[in-house]
Length: 203
Image (cartoon, rainbow, N blue to C red; front, side, top):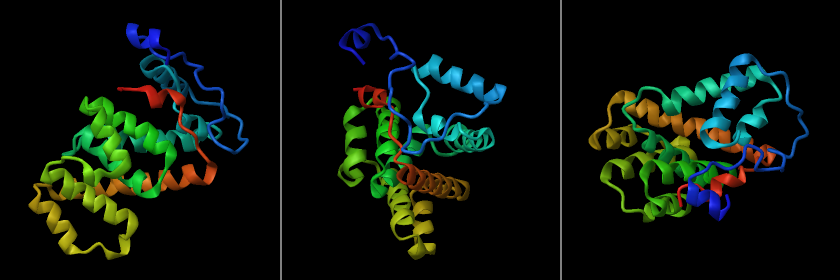
């Protein structure tokens, strides 16, 4: 984004990034009307179509499934705030060193928190952030689930209960962490690259 566009609050142009979304040569398939509308809404709201959506666009059925699952997990009703869900995404992606998700969800943490420093610390080392006990418990669980999932035991779930999370919240923490572990691995498998606009957001 140029200095002028920052000053005027304009969104970056829709075609801001000429690079391919992934290293795979998968041409865009025929998108359904709902997915065409979804892409148009992305361009209207943020100024571009995220590369993760472009990556899935070779197969409309897979794209629709991904979008539905993402929207349910990240935007649907939950005891977790949208910021908390984005923090889990960054925590998991940091453990997995996923370049795409760190750029995209690091930007989301900066935007939702209004704190650019928090976004940077989360990407580099969430343990260095000044976080409340609730968030430390949540992120510690997500980190353990990512690095040593076979060691998760009842005391880990109990730590979340003691931090104030409900049984449904624990499910949602696990579901968001699991989703980003899958997404991180697919991004690594395909060398998925973030849109350059993410790097300038909310700074």
